[in-house]
Amino acid sequence: MGKNDKHIENTIIERRLLDRLTNIPNREGFINLVGDQIINSQHEKVMVMMNVRNFKIINHIFGMQKGDEILVDIAKILSKRKVYGDICGRFYADRFGLFMSRDSWDEHPFDEQVKEIESLIDSSEFHLDLVTGVYLVKNHDDSAYDMVDKAVLAMKSQRQSSDTPFHFYSENMFNKAKHREVVIAEFDNALKNDEFVLFLQPQFTAEGELVGAEALARWDRQHSGEILPPSRFIDILEETKRIHRLDQYIWDLAAKQLKAWENTKFKDITISVNISPEDFECINVENYFKELILKYRIDPSKLHIEITENAIIYSPVKFENFVNAMKEEGFVLELDDFGSGYSSLNVLKNINVDTIKLDMVFVRGLKGDERAQIILKSVIDMIVKLGMDIIVEGLETRGQLETIKEMGNVLYQGYYFSKPLKISLFEEKYGKVLE
Ligand code: C2E
Ligand code: MG
Ligand code: MG
Image (cartoon, rainbow, N blue to C red; front, side, top):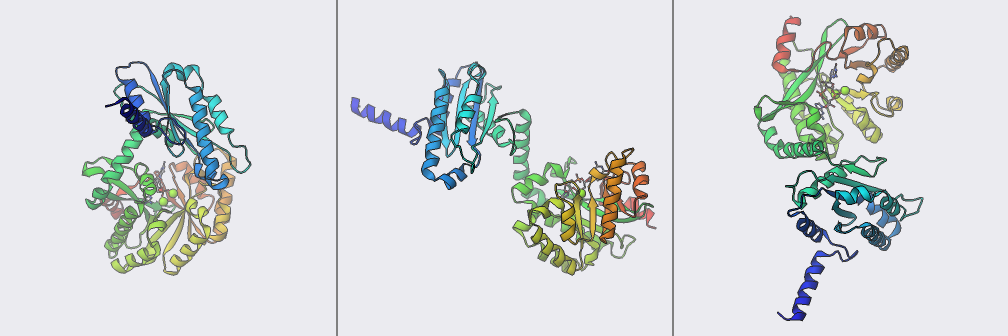
């Protein structure tokens, strides 16, 4: 190979590993350089990944050319900071990576660069915000890819309006991300193999008379007896647009249960099911419930439907229509978690549900707190005046029951009476009571 060929070859390699726009290494270039550096190195390292929050909006407001200029400037600012051995690259779009020794990270604080980058746009229309994930490399067996993944994980777990631009990777984040992958990977089979189980939490009058139950999902993972609570899977299923499949399954079990109780002591017991706002994005909820009633030939007034306050706040008109349509069909509508969100009172004005489920926040710290008691009493009075029923959630002590009983006629759901139970246990326990 001639000298000229060698030169061309190098140029091609260089081009392949360089980002055309900013002239710093691209993703491959960055990974290669990091890979070279970590071989045999026992020095402490730091991997940083950064993004501009809502970068697309820059292109939208100021145009593509300005967007490109910003990216070039970011690359310049980051390169300027580099001390010997530091590596900086642009992965794609607005994502940049930096790799450095721990000494470099400690001795040349990044705050300056962050400020400089954030001041690249001085506009009332857009504030340039950086989102940064930092992995202080602990494991020397990590490949360059592992390091990048961990820094990205830290970056992504940053909340919307965090006041520090840096977010540090932790083992906990890794475990959470791993758990998320497990849920996604196992969900289809779990649903097919009936690993999701319907638990029922009973609802009572103040006198202890059983009137209904809430259907709550549990996951008996691979039928191992390891029971996962909803907090371990609902959010993940919502974020990945899978929740409607679980919800349909649970609603079906609830309807089936109502049918099974039809000619038994449990015939008057109602079951409330939860719906997620995401369900409305993927299926026709109204039709599904109508079909359930036809499929099991049950009385729709026995099947109560819970919508959370938060869902309603984001699309009030949609839910107003939904609530009215479902009531027309004979279903009973409940507003869940009332009082846990931001708005509240206005929701009551427009959404004509049958029942309000008061969130646990109203019950917590009621004892000896006069202000808390005044608030709860007023809320109960108001809801009663509006002609709606009330279920107080999260009742845990006899004292709470005594206090709330004085305030009005409400129903109760909480550990004081019972935790959510497997259906067989529910029937065993309350079958006797209903004799
Ligand atoms: P939620 O609908 O507000 O359900 C009430 C939650 O409070 C249940 O938690 C229940 O076990 C818990 N709880 C009841 N009484 C007490 C008490 O006295 N003290 C305390 N500390 N907690 C009490 P769980 O079963 O863990 O469910 C959590 C949330 O997950 C539910 O809140 C609901 O929003 C959601 N969820 C549960 N099952 C489903 C489902 O099938 N589909 C959907 N979309 N969401 C579900
Ligand atoms: Mg609920
Ligand atoms: Mg609730």
